[in-house]
Length: 465
Image 1 (cartoon, one colour):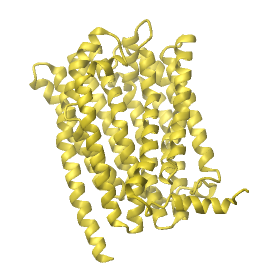
Image 2: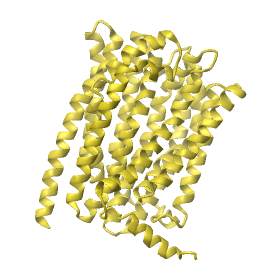
Image 3: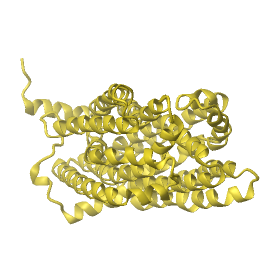
Image 4: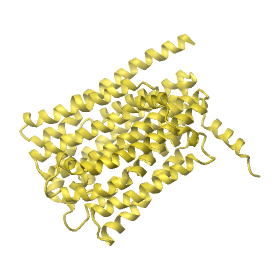
């Protein structure tokens, strides 16, 4: 017997009520599929670099060229975070209060903002891509590869932003399996298409970019179909696409944290590439591309866990279940620290294994082994930054989240990247050392502040109730 649509939606709402059941179970139910999804999502860029590293000729130059486009890709992700990660926690809070109509308005406005800015960024990207790539550390040898990749990638910018930005609203409604399927669909397509375009059609980096564009189109189409279908608790509706100033302000204020994290990452990538080009040349810019690739892979479980915790924390906060908020924060923080400690140990012991995934050039491997041990020293401290900022975002505390994004990257990393190479005898080692120093200082400051602020606020609210 077919269950009526209205009854199915009531059941789904009850299943995705995060004030019920174990807090840890709710977090794991969301975070495990989201972690898998984010690991798969990394394959979009990482698989490109793996295949490019296998090209018979100019593999290192090609990989370095793609690495030079990372700041541009990061800027695109920043805007997806601004409107996706800005709107999704607000939806969770509104849904926790039982106001689904407001939640749908927030989602509709986020979708419109993603559409508008994707078109603007594509146009701007084509106008200034050449000076940008040289600014980011390109040389005459690596520019053609970087230019070939980004010229095609920008065509699919709309699909990238829709799939990344709107998938947050699928996860925030308690459908992590659907969210995982979004990235799985694109990643599988990318894995299949990459070798076809790169090796069979001999398209090189152009083939990698084309495979990515097609894959992101499939993901974006999947997201749109789900959010306009009957299964979703919150649905995209034409009436909610008209921008409302008050909602836009809330979305951008809360999304500034994810935006600033991505933008500051882009700035750090630029400064690192320029410094490494000066002290070590194209080889060390290639090493940085490998380090970024490794970091993307091993940091995804932390990102998945913190992102999976946000809907649970935000929903319970909106529902006034403050003891469950505390429990969620404790579990998320402990799990993140435990994982990053283990990851640090594995990386320090087996750097060669991870480096060879992306390149087989002996000179690059030898240079990268030392860089891995320096760059990822004390990696567990990074989890404190992730956990602290995620809690601030989940509770709608945009100012704190933005402040600590800027503190770690702009106030600490960038100056250290410039100063440490001048202090150490080996300039490239100084560039890599800036990251762990910033993790210790910025991570500690963010996490301790979060604990102090949240403890005080939750206690005040409980007394008021």
